[in-house]
Amino acid sequence: MRKLKFYIAALFLFLCSLLLCTVDIAGADAAEGKYYLGGMAAGFMLGAGGAEVIDLSEVVAEDGTHRPAADAGILAGDCILAVDKIRIKSIRDLNDALARSGGKELTVTVRRGGETAEVKITPVKEKKSGKYKIGVLIRDTLSGIGTVTYIDRETGRFGALGHKIADESDRLLEISDARVFLCSIVGVNRGARGKAGELRGLFLNDKTIARAETITDTGLYGTFENYDYTDCRIVDTAPLSEAEIGKATIWATVNGVCPQEYEIAIAKVDAGGRDNKNFVIKVTDEKLIEETGGIVQGMSGSPIIQNGKLIGAVTHVFINDPTRGYGIGIEKMIGN
Image 1 (tube, rainbow, N blue to C red):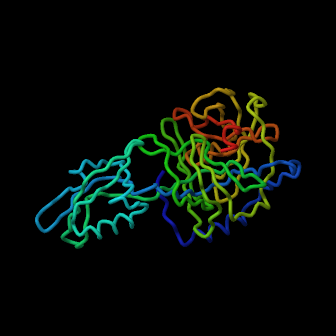
Image 2 (image 1 turned 90 degrees about the vertical axis):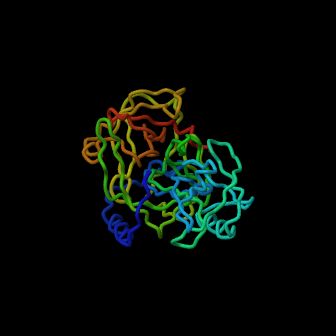
Image 3 (image 1 turned 135 degrees about the vertical axis):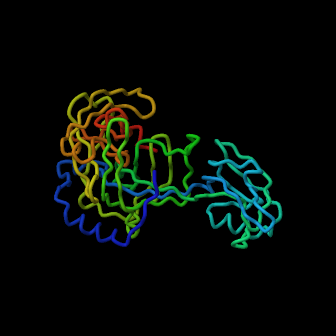
């Protein structure tokens, strides 16, 4: 997912969106339920667990051009975990380690494809800046938009996304200083046959609502810390054994900060489905189809409701038909 720019106007948009919310999602008839229903869009900012190499570059020094990292065997996608046994958690940590080197050889610990190795790299003083560099472009955080599925009323524990977050080698990302922000959806790139759409939103930086703690194959999990549950619907869950082919709804946010209910049909139920594919769903709500084309990136985690109970969450879209997609059974998410 692409990184989002932060705008001063975000808070204003948030307040305006609240004023425009007209749907009453207070579920008085489900007041005894255990969970708050999600559907709200959230901005996830996750530490990369180190300094992730996204590309290699040259270092122009007084005596010519050098490629220290490339010569040492570093590849794009590697994650720098330590320098001379000192843990690297951010870009700043790596820059400090290079500055301390004074141009002397360093032992760099990298992770690649789930395995770690040590390589020797000698930093080079860049002619223009006078700083020691090794010729890498790196990032230390990843950010994107997803949807919260549920929040436990007693503990504040939440589940979101319904699928794993992986790096280029399909390895689960590690959690490091992971924060969850309220997110205002300001636009949609509509889905079309052969091309997935996506939600476009603004992180509301003054609205940190949760701390993400765990990433698993079934989603992102953590604890809500600062959120007003007044307008949240309260629900119970139902296992896959109670799900049935037929009408259902999803709760999703495709404009502003207010979740809306949209009609879908469950076309298939598969309790043994692999890769979090327990449901095949089809969007039947004309309003949602008009706005988004169907299921788009950022809607992952949107809760699926049938017969008044939370039965699962949206996880994937069919590339050849954006009105169709997959969902995961809620019992696979709860308990992580």
